Image (cartoon, rainbow, N blue to C red):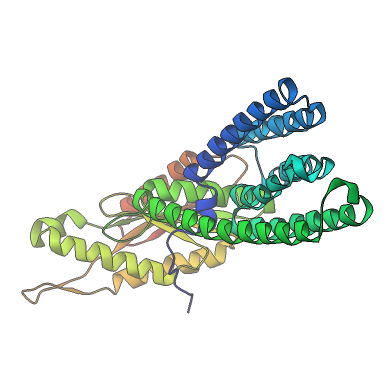
Length: 350
């Protein structure tokens, strides 16, 4: 039996969502603004020209991150590189001066930046790695350069500050991810069936399509439409119609794999995206879906039994199809042929 997908919105979809990217974009701009202010202060007021230069580099890096995020060209490697540069700048400013300058307090900012830019898992690993480097450098300074005023208590205080920053950053990121998940469920979920809606399936399609192109794997788009559904609504009412819609959604989900995505995109119309799968397996799944819906029996309050069928059209990735609209156009044509050919059937169109 193919496992049922219990989580409609995958977390990786959220991380790539427009809301998440907007947060990264705005946060990078705000960080660049603060660094620009410190550049002005250190250059014109405190005359710390080296610190001002390092902060200016950090400001440019954050502006580049914001620009690349805005253009959808940013990936994890780019963020990690930017974070390493920023962490180096902060560390240089903190450890190059004496303890009375107070620069050491800025190292506690790095874990927050790591979580903010990389998310919980990568952010936690980056925070631990950078924190260990900071503590090692500080320990060496305490031993080699006692004239700077750093002591064992400074090391212990820095360790405590970094651990607190990592702890609170973890809590913050969990809350942020939870909020994003809730927001995505509200904007990308069909309230009747708890499936994705049209907006949600397009977002998932784009993520899965990019992944399939990168890994050179096939991707299939299915369009399903219940046959003669209008007659059911006219004869039995919308309450029974809604019950059939929900039963159909459950039947389709039960036949799909965990990595597949399914959505309700219209009244009685559904769509599914199946990545990394062979044509024979797709054919088996679509036929299983067709049979599952054909075998559904909905009992009305008056004891009548309603049976319904579905027509399915689907297509696969190719060099000619590079967008959701192109996939949907061809799959919809296949669906039309299934309807025209007598309904309750599956048609593939390349």
